[in-house]
Length: 464
Image 1 (cartoon, rainbow, N blue to C red):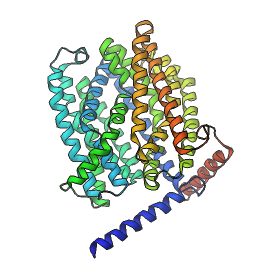
Image 2 (tube, rainbow, N blue to C red):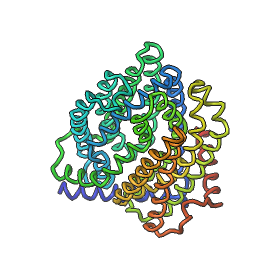
Image 3 (spheres, helix red, strand yellow):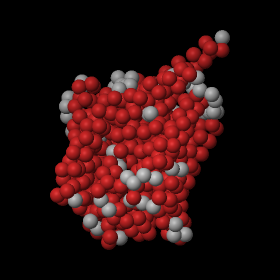
Image 4 (tube, one colour):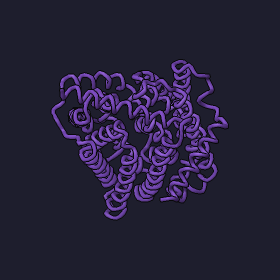
């Protein structure tokens, strides 16, 4: 009898969420746009805090220290992803499709992250002690300290994906802003005031991720009555099965913003790495726009099996035009803004960022396609695009860098993003059976819908 009641409850929840998804389509009203607007507002706060954090890092660590810090964070984040086998995404998929309870999916996500982190630390320890050139770009003590970053980043990421899977978008956006504020305060205290240098920056990042983990787990425990439990064998198998299909994409996604830094870590001095990563960090903040929209879209695509691709196309074309406008503003003001925010030492990052803007614009809308393929249980398509782009990046880097230096590295990254965008666009067109330019060309109805939604949101905000 209890099983029948639970089954009916799950079906009722599914019908209710399907109805909510219907109301959130561009043709049905502002419910979905209000949620996205909330996400974008909070992401705007995160953007502002991130800019302040980057400014503090630039003035206190200077290009050389900034490069060493980037190498350590790169090392920790990639090591964790390599050993996690995509299980964080696998556990999220189970929760979105209701193949596991909230408690089980959370337990699987955290358990697999812990096991993966332990494996990563065990593998990384002897590497730090080796003579590999990469591990000479920062102090050995900084690399040892960054080992603690591995579980902090992995567990926070797993908990964040669970929040997304349960559609706790507004609360997650607030937590992201709190995390960014904590990170900035930590950098200010440990690096600017206590003068702990790269080690202080690593500790601040570790603390902000630990805080994010605690906030997400506490929210799910209170609002979803989630508790830690011993996962079932079937649940773990299903998680690993999906995770392995997502694995290559996960590695690629982790390498994506950091591959240039990794390659530079092999051949360049820390100061060059610092200038390049600062330039990329300055413009990559606009990726918060497609990230917010993709976060909103993914559970809905998974819930309806991808039967409404026109909504994905709408989100993609809006993303492209919004990001394009933001990047145009950056190109117009960056020559004056970068020396002010990051100091004169980072002025060469301006031209590098202009080159990378081209690739970032190309890829911004394609992140929406990535959410679509994840939602229709085809993450391997995203994996193919990631590794195709990364291969182009490596080839172009070793072709262009010896002749053009950091400018060549910037063009290599741009070539990577353009190649990946073209592949995802073509695959979306073939899978969704929509016209080729349906996801690119902004329509009059799109502008009218966005204008109406903005007016209604403004009225609601004033009414409060």
